[in-house]
Image 1 (cartoon, rainbow, N blue to C red):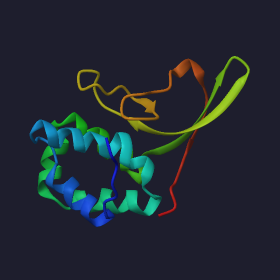
Image 2 (cartoon, helix red, strand yellow):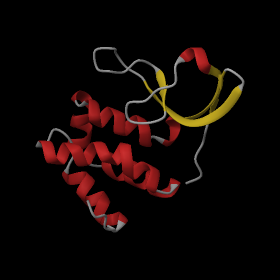
Image 3 (cartoon, helix red, strand yellow):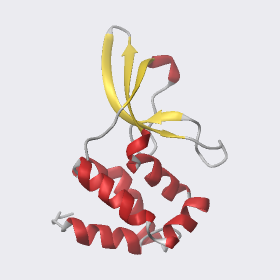
Image 4 (cartoon, one colour):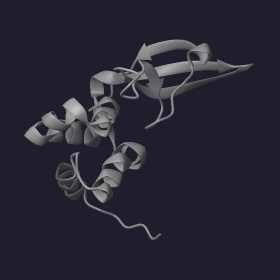
Length: 135
């Protein structure tokens, strides 16, 4: 598949048009906001899209029922960012994470996630520090 660039404002408008629940193609784009595009955005862009979408009443409704919206919200929320230091055998590493709070039935479990569906097992966590992005 060939990649192409899209303006950040156009990306934000597309994200707003794809707030769940939407047809499957839109749902895949919405998930990619968390899985792919988060990595490509600067801290100010992440904060901007997070604040922009919260102004939309569909977002508030979606946040009540849609797991993908809850994951997006947890990932982009500047107040929900953590640096987690882990130790596996002799190696130590630090990861930028977010916390997915909520019920097990929803797929949330108060774990520290490094991606859409990848978390750090508790037995490897050495230290957790709150991280405040510079926006």
